[in-house]
Image 1 (spheres, rainbow, N blue to C red):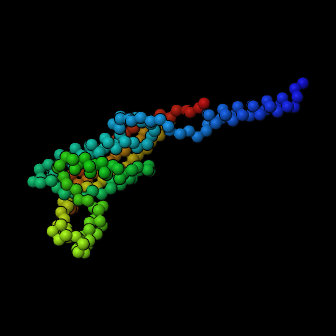
Image 2: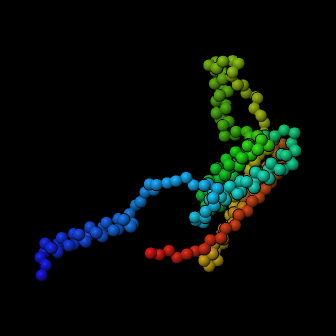
Image 3: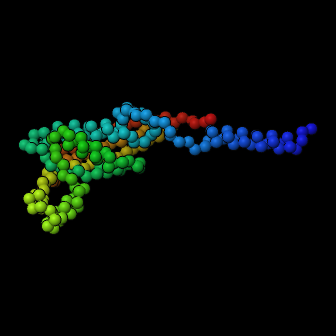
Length: 205
């Protein structure tokens, strides 16, 4: 018959082993090793909007806008104000990044120029500071010399989700419009659609 001391030691060792096993299997883990990845590679890791979707949509819009007659045949690059792409989906999508990507790529084409609407408050402060007497006269920037915009670039991202059995279909549509600021007409427009299919799989140990 085992002594109480032997039984106690056995229970302690068993408890320690179980604790160690559970901490190794289900405890919190940290990402400690990383490597650079190719941002252009398409990997559908989940059923959410991803970088590849954003890139495909942005590329389509950019090609359409620079090839539009009102832009490509303009005597000089039109000046554009960009509005943030509206998110009409139920997902949390960074449409600010999408807007910035489209604007940056369009600027690099040298076919359009953009007014920095977001910095108008800072510009006004600088004009006031330039008139304060602290800035050298020849270098002070005056009001009344800003370039007026010719167009407003705006758009919206919409989605539709359908589930049939174990299949899930996700449809995204980005619509972008270039609106003439003087006539209010939409001179250029483009749509890009993406449809993805996912399969539901059981997850078990």
